[in-house]
Amino acid sequence: MPWYPYNPTGTPPYSVTNPAFYGNPQANQPTCPSPDNFLCTIQANDSSGQPVITFALLEEITFALNNRTETTNVKLRPSVV
Image (cartoon, rainbow, N blue to C red; front, side, top):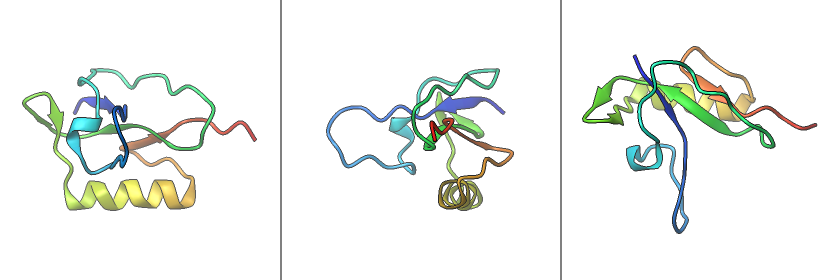
């Protein structure tokens, strides 16, 4: 499965459930720059260049963000603290 970097742009509100806020699919996991312990990239099935965000993946994203813990399919930006 490809990796999709989370790149919210434009006017908020941003949503991790909106496939439009993810960049182009990448074969390898991208580097996650500082400064936040926030969503960096997800691994998901592809649908015309956008991630398929299933309920299971959404639960995984929620778990990772709430617990500040990366999972198999969800990578976070490193914390500066």
